[in-house]
Length: 210
Figure 1 (cartoon, rainbow, N blue to C red):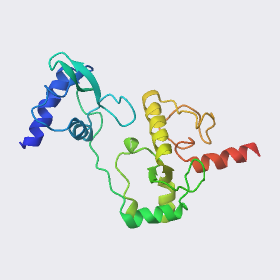
Figure 2 (cartoon, rainbow, N blue to C red):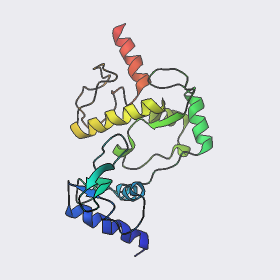
Figure 3 (tube, helix red, strand yellow):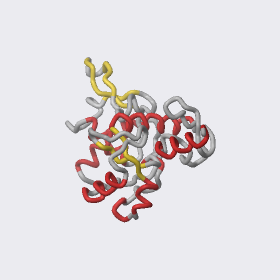
Figure 4 (cartoon, rainbow, N blue to C red):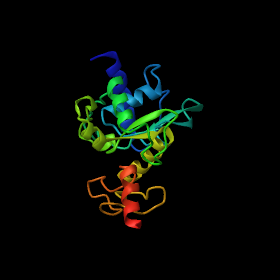
């Protein structure tokens, strides 16, 4: 067993013995491993921690043992909630191809993106059985699976999809309760939701209004 694995297992045992409680990462860790790195390794293996804010799983709380504020996390399930799946990096050439295909336009507003361009999986990564290898897709398949978003819109989508995952209710798209397929109830498909495909949602809404 490697040294790094032993660090993970030691902390995991502490978190499992205090399931659904905030656990101090200072005195329950056997090394100086950064909390963010340690929790990321465990999340990649499928362990679920409470998300205190978008993409943040750690919280600063007072620890009675350490007598100071330390980093805490809360494990939600004893066992992994999904099988670990690797992310496939989109190479530079394919990234440029996707951006050109979509004319550098944000899927939610149609405006040209002048800041950082996020290539977004239409179906959230957490819902995919395995990641999509964009380098192997045709132009049509790329358009079916990806859209472009600004960083702010990518974060908004992440929050909306997380809410849907927890409640099985698809959130209104920017406050508009319209779905071009299905309704607000999530029944195993993201199709029809504005967060899934902002450009198609806008097109279908305009068709309905006209």
